[in-house]
Length: 218
Length: 218
DNA sequence: ATATTTTTTTAGACTAGTCTAAACTTTTAT
DNA sequence: ATAAAAGTTTAGACTAGTCTAAAAAAATAT
Ligand SMILES: [Mn+2]
Ligand SMILES: [Mn+2]
Ligand SMILES: [Mn+2]
Ligand SMILES: [Mn+2]
Image 1 (cartoon, each protein chain N blue to C red):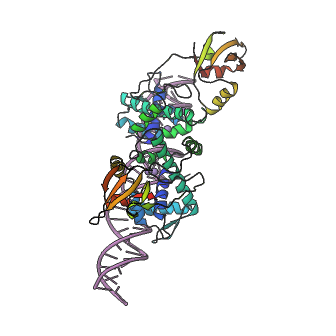
Image 2 (cartoon, each protein chain N blue to C red; image 1 turned 30 degrees about the vertical axis):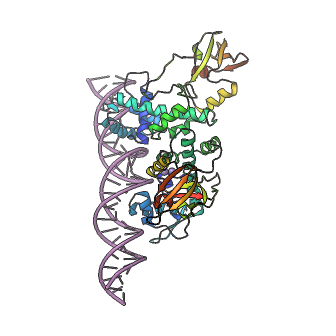
Image 3 (cartoon, rainbow over the protein chains, first blue to last red; image 1 turned 45 degrees about the vertical axis):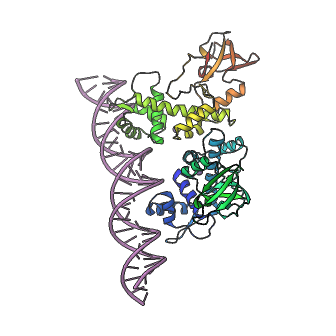
């Protein structure tokens, strides 16, 4: 059984490993965990002993099959709890992350399976991020940044890349939500900002940065 | 903010203080927490410094107003979560305690208030134990052990004193549940066991011990 | 190719919580 | 009243996790 801390490290290493085959560096983990490199080295040794990661001194770590599976279960719990908070307790999508960060460490298979069922086996959390199933399988759909879409092509908002509360609050304010139909009306040459039409009736300008953080499907 | 461990100690001290004005002894706490007296002494000093308990060396501790309030909030969370697990996730009443023991330590006022509302502001948990409100107020109803009731008087099962999974499973098996109407048909002189009628249609014999652990109202 | 800078690891210290063993205080028995 | 027993506290050690400072290795610049 993994400790609270071990689970958090493992999740960080998993996220840093995603979509990349090379080793995750000590400094990257320290950065993501807001901790010091020396602490990371200590933890790396522990996780390596438990065969959750492979470790080569001075060259970083690679997550193992077993480690990935454990990390996916933590992510599964995190996203199911976030879904619960929004769907059942009427949290807004910017309020759920910190609480889910605690709830994801509750140890009970029965609980998580029953929660999954209660929620109707959702496949994505309130931010559009996929929820791994009980076997760790993730349903992936190709999504592209809104910034990369051509003008006047219809698309649907599917997820946010950066889920910081302030960005999420901003999105709610301008009327962007997961599932919203959007078209780009005009790309502003000068700064890369976009004028978009949401829901067929709301025109707004969003920055290049914002458009980069919104993922859509055509 | 209290740690996980501090909360557990405080809850134990609160429970040992209930319905009694004299000090709680180190050994009693150690017993309840399944730990050693030396560890208790260490923790006692910490809680005392935080003014959650009063401590007189060699003579045990007394919980303070502030300590009681903190303990009640942990108990509130514990019982709300147990209610959630049974009402919403279809757990049985013997399955919820250990999970609630973890969930009670999640730190979020918003979460607990929303959960309370989601559950319809329940006043008792699945074992019939009262749920403190957000101000720590407990609604108390006078309940007596079924063992102390006179023969042929109608009563309703309100709560269980000992909530161990095996006792709860046994109760379910014989058809006893919170809210069940019961009458004592006969008290067996020999061993104090009772023949009772549940729901007006199920006759069973229960031990004196069992009858002592079932609390009822007339 | 060598020197400098950057990154990583090690060494040693600190906190929270736990334990055993020893010392001390209170209670109980004679 | 004194001795024995029981309960409590202290002392010192251990684990998990963290940190700073120093040492070591790798990457980069000259
Ligand atoms: Mn999140
Ligand atoms: Mn976490
Ligand atoms: Mn319980
Ligand atoms: Mn607990």
